[in-house]
Amino acid sequence: MTPEPTSAGVDELLGGGRAPGATGLRYVVVPGIWNSGDAHWQSSWERSWNAAVAGSAVRIEPASWDQPDRADWVRAIDDAVRAQGGLDGTVGRGDDRRVVLVAHSLGCLAATAWSAAHDGVVAGAFLVASPDPDARGFPAAATGFSMPDGPVDTPTLVVSSQDDQYCSPERAAHIAATLGAELVDVGTLGHVNVASGVGDWPDGRKLLGRFVESLTRGRPGGDPD
Image 1 (cartoon, rainbow, N blue to C red):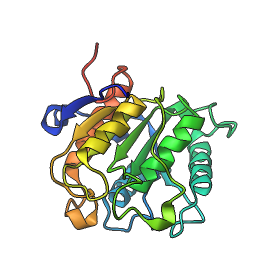
Image 2: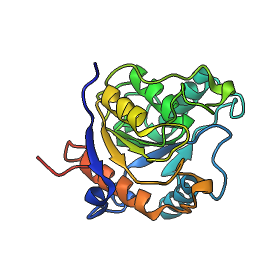
Image 3: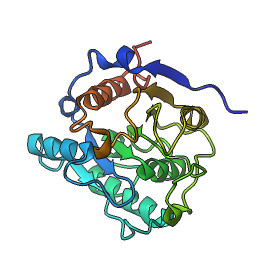
Image 4: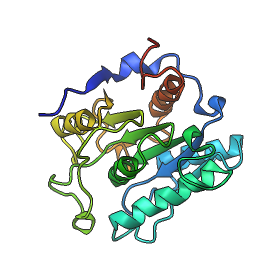
Protein backbone atom coordinates (compact mmCIF):
# COMPACT_ATOMS: atom_id res chain seq x y z
CA MET A 1 0.00 0.00 0.00
CA THR A 2 1.08 3.58 -0.64
CA PRO A 3 0.57 6.33 1.93
CA GLU A 4 -2.27 8.79 1.53
CA PRO A 5 -1.11 11.99 -0.18
CA THR A 6 -1.32 15.28 1.59
CA SER A 7 -4.10 17.05 -0.29
CA ALA A 8 -5.53 20.52 -0.51
CA GLY A 9 -8.16 22.34 -2.48
CA VAL A 10 -7.13 25.03 -4.90
CA ASP A 11 -8.93 27.76 -2.94
CA GLU A 12 -6.84 26.93 0.13
CA LEU A 13 -3.59 27.52 -1.71
CA LEU A 14 -4.27 30.46 -4.03
CA GLY A 15 -3.88 33.27 -1.54
CA GLY A 16 -0.67 34.96 -0.56
CA GLY A 17 1.85 33.47 -3.00
CA ARG A 18 4.58 35.80 -4.20
CA ALA A 19 5.39 36.03 -7.89
CA PRO A 20 7.86 33.20 -8.69
CA GLY A 21 10.36 35.64 -10.15
CA ALA A 22 10.68 37.36 -6.79
CA THR A 23 12.62 34.46 -5.30
CA GLY A 24 15.62 34.38 -7.64
CA LEU A 25 14.89 30.76 -8.53
CA ARG A 26 15.42 29.43 -12.04
CA TYR A 27 13.05 27.26 -14.01
CA VAL A 28 13.29 24.24 -16.25
CA VAL A 29 10.15 23.88 -18.38
CA VAL A 30 9.27 20.26 -19.16
CA PRO A 31 6.37 20.05 -21.66
CA GLY A 32 4.45 16.98 -22.73
CA ILE A 33 4.50 15.07 -25.99
CA TRP A 34 4.78 17.28 -29.11
CA ASN A 35 6.05 20.17 -26.96
CA SER A 36 3.94 23.09 -25.73
CA GLY A 37 2.88 25.61 -28.37
CA ASP A 38 2.92 29.39 -28.10
CA ALA A 39 -0.60 29.53 -26.64
CA HIS A 40 0.17 27.04 -23.86
CA TRP A 41 0.51 28.37 -20.30
CA GLN A 42 4.01 26.88 -20.06
CA SER A 43 5.14 28.97 -23.04
CA SER A 44 3.49 32.08 -21.65
CA TRP A 45 5.14 31.65 -18.27
CA GLU A 46 8.53 30.94 -19.84
CA ARG A 47 8.32 34.13 -21.93
CA SER A 48 7.36 36.24 -18.93
CA TRP A 49 10.12 34.81 -16.72
CA ASN A 50 12.76 35.48 -19.34
CA ALA A 51 11.36 38.94 -20.03
CA ALA A 52 11.71 39.73 -16.33
CA VAL A 53 15.11 38.06 -15.86
CA ALA A 54 16.94 36.96 -19.00
CA GLY A 55 17.87 33.28 -18.87
CA SER A 56 15.80 32.54 -15.77
CA ALA A 57 13.86 29.81 -17.62
CA VAL A 58 14.95 27.20 -20.13
CA ARG A 59 12.97 24.49 -21.90
CA ILE A 60 14.15 20.94 -22.33
CA GLU A 61 15.21 19.99 -25.87
CA PRO A 62 14.78 16.24 -26.39
CA ALA A 63 15.35 14.83 -29.88
CA SER A 64 12.17 12.77 -29.60
CA TRP A 65 9.25 15.19 -29.10
CA ASP A 66 6.90 13.19 -31.38
CA GLN A 67 8.11 9.66 -30.58
CA PRO A 68 9.12 10.14 -26.96
CA ASP A 69 12.07 8.17 -25.68
CA ARG A 70 12.22 8.18 -21.90
CA ALA A 71 16.00 8.09 -21.70
CA ASP A 72 16.26 10.96 -24.20
CA TRP A 73 13.83 13.10 -22.19
CA VAL A 74 15.62 12.36 -18.93
CA ARG A 75 18.92 13.37 -20.56
CA ALA A 76 17.26 16.56 -21.81
CA ILE A 77 16.19 17.45 -18.26
CA ASP A 78 19.71 16.72 -17.09
CA ASP A 79 21.12 19.09 -19.73
CA ALA A 80 18.64 21.84 -18.83
CA VAL A 81 19.39 21.57 -15.11
CA ARG A 82 23.09 21.75 -15.90
CA ALA A 83 22.48 24.89 -17.96
CA GLN A 84 20.52 26.50 -15.14
CA GLY A 85 22.90 25.32 -12.44
CA GLY A 86 25.78 27.42 -13.74
CA LEU A 87 29.17 27.22 -12.02
CA ASP A 88 30.86 23.88 -12.72
CA GLY A 89 27.99 22.40 -14.78
CA THR A 90 27.77 19.27 -12.65
CA VAL A 91 24.28 18.16 -11.65
CA GLY A 92 23.97 18.27 -7.89
CA ARG A 93 26.48 21.06 -7.48
CA GLY A 94 26.55 24.82 -7.86
CA ASP A 95 23.16 26.51 -8.07
CA ASP A 96 21.08 23.45 -9.02
CA ARG A 97 19.16 23.67 -5.75
CA ARG A 98 17.78 26.99 -6.97
CA VAL A 99 16.12 25.25 -9.94
CA VAL A 100 12.43 24.30 -10.09
CA LEU A 101 11.07 21.84 -12.65
CA VAL A 102 7.75 23.00 -14.14
CA ALA A 103 6.27 20.01 -15.93
CA HIS A 104 3.04 19.24 -17.78
CA SER A 105 1.50 15.98 -18.97
CA LEU A 106 4.10 13.45 -20.18
CA GLY A 107 6.77 15.83 -18.94
CA CYS A 108 5.66 14.96 -15.40
CA LEU A 109 6.61 11.32 -15.89
CA ALA A 110 9.96 12.39 -17.33
CA ALA A 111 10.49 14.75 -14.40
CA THR A 112 9.72 12.07 -11.81
CA ALA A 113 12.06 9.64 -13.59
CA TRP A 114 14.80 12.27 -13.51
CA SER A 115 14.11 13.07 -9.86
CA ALA A 116 14.37 9.41 -8.91
CA ALA A 117 17.92 9.37 -10.29
CA HIS A 118 18.87 12.81 -8.92
CA ASP A 119 16.82 12.99 -5.74
CA GLY A 120 17.05 16.18 -3.76
CA VAL A 121 19.20 17.90 -6.39
CA VAL A 122 16.78 20.65 -7.44
CA ALA A 123 14.69 22.93 -5.26
CA GLY A 124 11.36 21.45 -6.28
CA ALA A 125 9.09 19.96 -8.94
CA PHE A 126 5.71 21.41 -9.96
CA LEU A 127 3.81 18.67 -11.83
CA VAL A 128 0.61 19.50 -13.69
CA ALA A 129 -1.79 16.93 -15.20
CA SER A 130 0.47 13.92 -15.02
CA PRO A 131 -0.97 11.18 -17.23
CA ASP A 132 -1.64 7.58 -16.28
CA PRO A 133 0.24 5.22 -18.64
CA ASP A 134 -2.59 2.70 -18.20
CA ALA A 135 -5.31 5.18 -19.17
CA ARG A 136 -7.22 4.93 -22.40
CA GLY A 137 -5.75 7.39 -24.87
CA PHE A 138 -2.23 7.37 -23.43
CA PRO A 139 0.03 7.86 -26.48
CA ALA A 140 1.21 4.54 -27.87
CA ALA A 141 4.45 6.27 -28.83
CA ALA A 142 5.19 6.93 -25.15
CA THR A 143 4.95 3.37 -23.85
CA GLY A 144 8.45 3.58 -22.37
CA PHE A 145 7.19 6.02 -19.73
CA SER A 146 5.89 4.66 -16.44
CA MET A 147 4.32 5.69 -13.17
CA PRO A 148 6.70 6.71 -10.37
CA ASP A 149 7.55 3.75 -8.15
CA GLY A 150 8.69 5.34 -4.93
CA PRO A 151 8.98 8.49 -2.82
CA VAL A 152 11.38 11.34 -3.59
CA ASP A 153 13.03 13.84 -1.28
CA THR A 154 12.63 16.62 -3.85
CA PRO A 155 9.72 18.83 -2.69
CA THR A 156 6.96 18.08 -5.18
CA LEU A 157 3.49 19.45 -5.85
CA VAL A 158 1.12 17.37 -7.99
CA VAL A 159 -1.67 19.38 -9.61
CA SER A 160 -4.63 17.41 -10.98
CA SER A 161 -7.97 18.02 -12.66
CA GLN A 162 -11.14 16.09 -11.88
CA ASP A 163 -12.03 15.53 -15.55
CA ASP A 164 -8.59 14.91 -17.04
CA GLN A 165 -9.12 12.28 -19.74
CA TYR A 166 -5.58 11.01 -19.25
CA CYS A 167 -5.68 10.48 -15.50
CA SER A 168 -8.49 9.84 -13.04
CA PRO A 169 -8.54 11.63 -9.67
CA GLU A 170 -7.81 8.29 -7.99
CA ARG A 171 -4.71 7.70 -10.10
CA ALA A 172 -3.55 11.28 -9.56
CA ALA A 173 -3.85 10.66 -5.82
CA HIS A 174 -1.83 7.46 -6.27
CA ILE A 175 0.93 9.37 -8.08
CA ALA A 176 1.11 11.96 -5.30
CA ALA A 177 1.07 9.33 -2.57
CA THR A 178 3.80 7.31 -4.26
CA LEU A 179 6.03 10.37 -4.56
CA GLY A 180 5.23 11.56 -1.04
CA ALA A 181 4.00 14.77 -2.64
CA GLU A 182 1.18 17.18 -1.93
CA LEU A 183 -1.83 16.92 -4.23
CA VAL A 184 -3.88 19.92 -5.35
CA ASP A 185 -7.22 19.44 -7.13
CA VAL A 186 -7.94 22.38 -9.45
CA GLY A 187 -11.48 21.30 -10.32
CA THR A 188 -12.66 20.60 -13.86
CA LEU A 189 -9.92 21.87 -16.16
CA GLY A 190 -9.56 18.85 -18.43
CA HIS A 191 -5.91 18.20 -19.23
CA VAL A 192 -5.00 21.77 -18.16
CA ASN A 193 -3.88 22.68 -21.66
CA VAL A 194 -4.85 24.99 -24.53
CA ALA A 195 -7.98 22.93 -25.22
CA SER A 196 -9.05 23.51 -21.60
CA GLY A 197 -9.24 27.24 -22.28
CA VAL A 198 -7.01 28.18 -19.33
CA GLY A 199 -4.90 30.58 -21.39
CA ASP A 200 -2.04 31.96 -19.29
CA TRP A 201 -3.62 30.10 -16.35
CA PRO A 202 -3.37 32.84 -13.70
CA ASP A 203 -4.52 30.50 -10.93
CA GLY A 204 -1.71 28.15 -11.85
CA ARG A 205 0.78 30.99 -11.55
CA LYS A 206 -0.54 31.63 -8.05
CA LEU A 207 -0.20 27.97 -7.14
CA LEU A 208 3.38 27.95 -8.39
CA GLY A 209 4.09 31.16 -6.48
CA ARG A 210 2.74 29.62 -3.30
CA PHE A 211 4.77 26.45 -3.89
CA VAL A 212 7.97 28.39 -4.58
CA GLU A 213 7.43 30.45 -1.46
CA SER A 214 7.00 27.26 0.55
CA LEU A 215 10.33 25.86 -0.64
CA THR A 216 12.10 28.16 1.78
CA ARG A 217 9.79 27.03 4.57
CA GLY A 218 10.00 23.27 4.16
CA ARG A 219 6.46 22.36 3.18
CA PRO A 220 5.28 22.30 -0.48
CA GLY A 221 2.26 24.53 -0.92
CA GLY A 222 1.60 24.80 2.81
CA ASP A 223 2.03 27.04 5.78
CA PRO A 224 5.21 27.29 7.80
CA ASP A 225 5.68 24.83 10.63
